[in-house]
Image: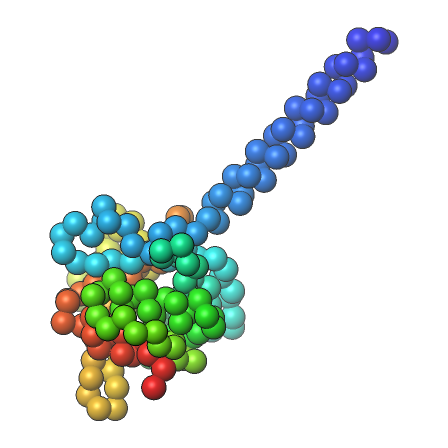
Length: 202
C-alpha cells in the first residue's frame, strides 16, 4: 500500500506535465510572426507575412484577423474573402474587403510605408477598402482544365486595387492554412506608393 501512493503521485505529476506541454504548444502554434522576414526578401521584392490570429466562417465568406510584429509593435488588419462560388468561371470576382482593427491597422499602414521607404508621416488606416481579385487556381484551371499541382498554398489570389480616379495597384495574396499564415507577395515596386495610398484614410 505504501508504494501505491508514490506511484499515484508520480502518475499525477506526469499527467500535469503532459497537459502543460500541450497547452504551451497550442499557444505557440498561434504565435504572431514578423511582418517582414529579411531572409525571404533578398531578391529585392518585399513580401510580408501576417499570422491568422482568428478565422470566422460566415454564410458566403471567411473573415481573417491578421497580425504580425514590426519594430516591437503589434500590427494588422481584418480581411473578408468571398467563397469560391462568388467568382466567375475564370476566377474573377469582387467583394474582398479589408477592414481596420483600429490602432493596430494604423500601425500596419505606417509600418508598410516605412518598409517601402516612402513618406513616414503617421497616418490612419481607412475603415474599409473594397478590392477585386482573380483566383489564380481557377484562372489556370479555366485554360488548362487542370488544377495547379504541388502548390504550397491552399488559396492564391491576385488583388486588384482600383480607384475612381484610375489609380491602381496589384498584390498577390497566398494563404498557408497549415501554417496559419497569409502572405502578401509584391508584384511590382511601382505599386508600392499607390498601395499605401489605398490603405490610407482620406
